[in-house]
Image 1 (cartoon, one colour):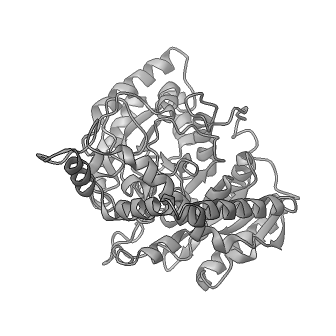
Image 2 (cartoon, helix red, strand yellow; image 1 turned 90 degrees about the vertical axis):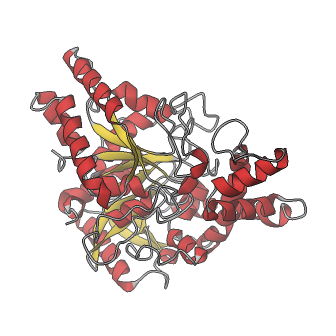
Image 3 (tube, one colour; image 1 turned 60 degrees about the vertical axis):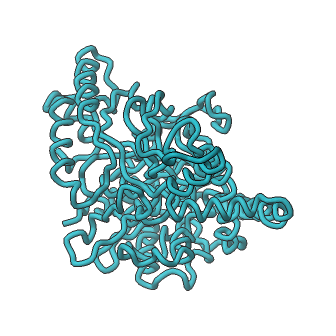
Length: 485
């Protein structure tokens, strides 16, 4: 069963070949047996999963089943789950058990899905390798049997590794600068970041509020469509959530691609991209031409400014969002503080890891008096220019295609002492978050035995078109079916 997609498992449950309880138990047994190699989970919620599986069987018996009823999956440990600890990969929230559900959590519960637990992640979603987690690094299932371990990407590396290792058929992720697409690419799975505001952020622990967006991590585009059907939609509890009708994302998956206009941004095929990676991406684009699409080069002239703008805006928002973790109401508190100031400073010094502290410092500096105009305001103006580049490009083409990452999965520890080289891992993904448009990563080949992702980028609310393009590609290739040894 662990090799079947969500769509296939849904059909097995529908036909009565297997019950939700049996399916959940199979995945839990596999998870407990295998995850020691990957450390992809922080919390396994076995008891709650079996209660949910029993409820799913009852739902099905009562004729109230959805496509997700009884399907096992996992949440990135950034989504609040009532009664199940939510750590955000940090010592600061090591023992935090939320008293409520995130909207995304609630939607999966209503659909009858079975949550097996919470996946590992970079601390507070800050990282590109899932090495900054307080609960230890996650290992990429690709190459896990070789002498050196590789990173699964980040920050949703636990979700990506769990799906790639067939520990769960699907998992939620979040994407602030590439945190769904980059790990999906490095682990050889499908990952979708929707338009900003398409999925509610209520109960999703904030990193950078104008950039964060929840999304889907699955093996196939069809499964990602099924997942977005559950996740998307207006939520009055999130002021940035868009009140717009949600289509059935599976309805247009099989439409032919004849006439699709694809743009290749020349800035994304630069010297930062390894020649072997470029070859795989261009080979994938040629498959689209065979399917009837046309291809032309386009330009995103301000793309080169994306990383600089992002690393002012995201840390600035993080420094504001993370000011709530001060030892007063919840989360970690230092031992025996002398006074209030001692409690604040020691709690934060002991509770946050190095990368989080680095970004808080950068963000606080950018927002400080005398520097706000020079840094934060200027970065927001650059952000507008980047957004305008995409708007202009989509007047000429239907979708853009590019690499997701400049190279395949790197060795664990390789970039830990060089934050800038780590930040450059997101050189092809960050601009999409600044613009707020949707994009996805689709498995598109291998370099040195490691997966490569093709990035498909769309205009606002064009998720259905992206999923259609990805699904059609997966009908003529089998990269998404390859599994690690």
